[in-house]
Image 1 (cartoon, one colour):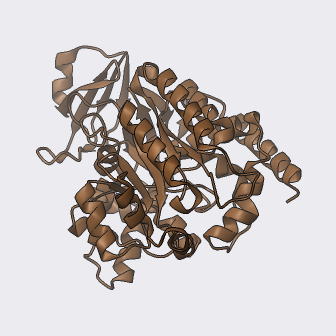
Image 2: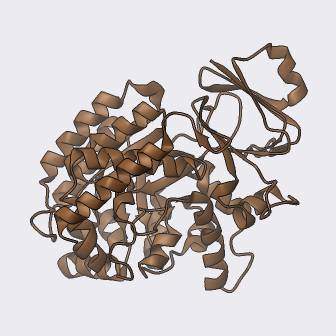
Length: 443
């Protein structure tokens, strides 16, 4: 399969060749084989499919480095609560009432929503009852993703608890199953939830499993003051200190949120090579605080970007999340230059790829990289005229500007139309299962 993109402005996110005007891209069998001036595409003959991008802007596909796609069924249930009250009153009761069919329908809707904001890869943190349903949906659609196998082991209601050995065994089965499938599009990793809800033994076993298969350890870290205080009362240590002393921090550790940290903890994260996944909208929505992202950046900590779950964000719009990520820190520190549009775009592209250890395959547009691209139509009332493509994306664009999304060289959305399924049918099915789930939970 060959796909050519002709014309348009290419924002490569490559330092050697950052922006190409009147560009051209050729993808063969899922890999980019040419990036340059469109005139040179003639040298490669006639591709199977061509996309005319004249007047449009081509970016690397965005990486949503933390989400809970099953939460599309819970949007705006239990609004205006803090993290722990929201978990106890909404998420945990509803999650235990979901069926396999519900989780699959939610995953399909979640993938559609991610695609429509330009996301080509998502790290989906699923709870243990139906780990495989998001993977099945991703596989069928042709999407790229990482399943983070989440579990709570202690300090939570009985109906939420899962023994770590059971959860990690399921996780290992899926790691093995998907290691050689889907052209490398799907990966799996252990994801013990907040340290205050997980035992030391479970965290160490999770680290052992991640090391065994060279995958990630994905942990909600220092998300709110209340969960940090719970851990302090149990261990006398804050989240990052506790994780450091356990020996689980390293360059495959994804520290989700990392809002409530001390300077010492920032230094520990920096020295370990751990990655931060910043979820600004969720942190604001739940009143969790402002992550010290500019300080992480100053310490050379890699910061990726996530939407978090659509019940603690209320959507999975990575374009909107980019703008919040920039503006939040500007106003918090009263400094408009403390974080730039370029730095935020890096969080959503190459930094996300680095967090996944895939910067040689994702996060920028270059020969040899996967054919994961998003094409923006900026000829809209909110974006015309484009003086600065990156500034226009981060500060002016919305998900409605996303025109075309390509994963592995396959077009999953073109002219804002989903190509792989009947979008309305996906929405109707998710709408129905959401209603039934709330009825079963008595909410």
